Length: 239
Image (cartoon, rainbow, N blue to C red; front, side, top):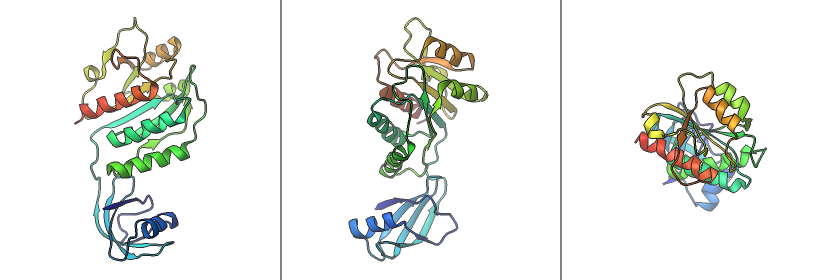
């Protein structure tokens, strides 16, 4: 069954009009007609079943048949703060796969060794929406605007109940694995650095505000691979 992302749809609505772009896709591309069944997600946990009441290429009308709140609501909150890569395609790949696996929040962080200093979120949010639809998820991950690591650490340090970890590559540092430090059903924040890793002073500051040094294994991973590895570890911890 065809799935549409409808951020403006409210639970008490009995009728809903698709945007012109979605209407065109439904009628011209998918060839949907009156009476056709579709599914809708609103990005905040709502899952809807609907049928087409008027198949118009610019303003398709839907009749809402059923509403399910908190559809597949996760029992944890994962926030990954990751240094954006020089090639933005690699961050798009991470966002797509992390959304499919399960993530609730992402923040691009600009650190001393960052290859990219600017991130445009409009395109990245489209990647997230597409992955939501692919994986049938009703919750849209929050993509924050890029922020300096220093400012991010200052803010994160204020949250004492958050389970915080920093993954870095310093060989002589004492580190544990995520499943040794975290349990299921928690709020997690994991820092993933750029290809050149975090600087020693950045690691020191993160630890000083409550971040636990962790290892993601023996292999030296690319930034986006490390971020997805952490995402998968947390998903398995909460399976």
